[in-house]
Image 1 (spheres, rainbow, N blue to C red):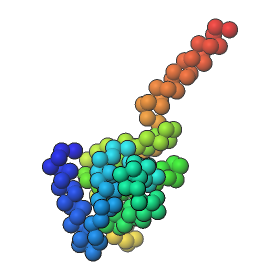
Image 2: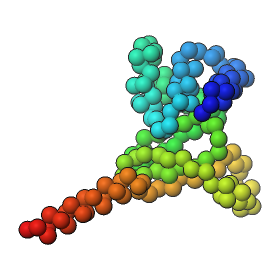
Image 3: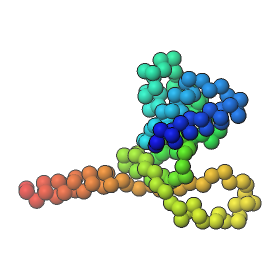
Image 4: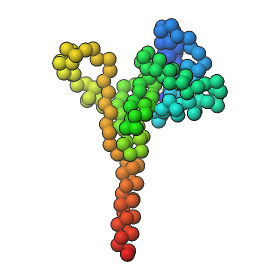
Length: 161
């Protein structure tokens, strides 16, 4: 992300907090800043570990509560994983997720065709839609490559006996 875009996101964050009547505390700013810089969709625990040296008074509970507040303000998106451990990202651009069920890695991808599809009119009878997103579960290339190497090694090992 460019420096200009990063600064714009921080300004947007400050405006959203002020509009909601929240103080822009140093802890809130650092948690959001860390999410903006993260590319790995960190869990609350991972965020805490990354921030605890810079913010010694920070608690894991504060990270959880802050993320919940950010989610209510639509500043962050929570992604549930196979292990039922929520992962977080700052909401910047519209995208979807590929979740590797083996290693847990999350990859962002853009799908304009999906975004352009009209939603079924029956949803109007259910309620108001705030956001749509796709989470595709599968196996990433890294895990597939490891699996092929293991299979190749196993086949090579049995042939030599």
